Image (tube, rainbow, N blue to C red; front, side, top):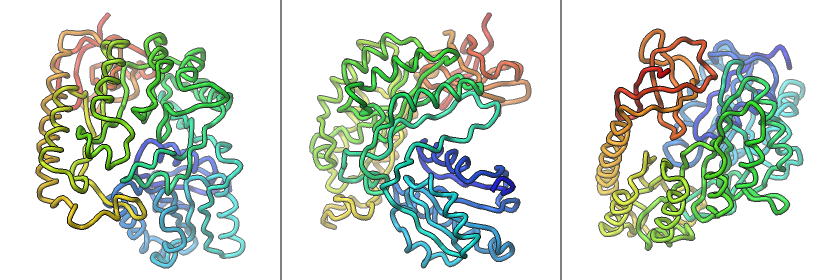
Length: 435
């Protein structure tokens, strides 16, 4: 296994990025930059929207000719699309060698052996994997940020979401395992950890809650910053808010998906909170951490969404003024309750598209204004690597999760430096090193 050259193509969220790094460690061998070099090619997929599905199928399809030229090359599909379609993928894609669900990553070496020794085309999509968290992620030397998973799966069962069906019920990782992985990463030069989970702040273990996890992680020597994503609004607790307020290492940013500003649509989505409850939670967060930056997710065109419902969402956007938002048109997912709603409830694509454009245009204005407002201020930036904005420039993020680009030597990577902001742009800020 150690001599194998491995190429992994990743689609989707931070959890998928983390899983791809776990796949690298599970399969062993050496990562390479192009599929043409590889002995094993794995496409790690996302199924959150139909477009993500299609990207996965397209990604697998393009390897047909490479597989014909290199018949001994092993081609596999992993992730949520693998879990969703299972052995149907082997029928649909004849050049595919194996199918691996998100929870079965620890069983990957066995799958590779079965392919090489018995010429099987194995499918492993079991949720019942004892070694669920045993394979930790590959970490590239010199990288100063890293993800650490605190849970797998989700119990929320939102009506539009396929995640519980492809990642299973929520399983929380034991605190000692989380801290051990974080400490190992810090020992490899990591300065910022992002805890990831489908609803990361619902983590609990033996009476401990997410706020306790934040406090425990802050005691790791050498760890400069702690982030987490994605939070579920209903699981914002006083214990969590107090930890965000008290622990200096916790970054001043939270990603808090609201999905809609309409109470009627939120009820249809089974989001378990109202718009008023969400607004009150934002107030509680900002009362505790006044400079907190909040980003969100929005779905427009949910079946039955009216002009009034959409206007309620825009009202919430104007009220909160999110730092940024990830917004999408509703995409029906197989097996979810929303996919079975009456056809007459479907919002015309043209209408949904127009709503999305309006919302995104508003968000762009807000994000730009907030970035311009930082001009003249001094920000602390963790330098992550070279900038794309010219030679002898570096890039990193502020505590509020803004991308900052500025002139500076590569030797600054891994350091937290002070940067005086000189320019606010649509998606980033620019500045100069401050003494």
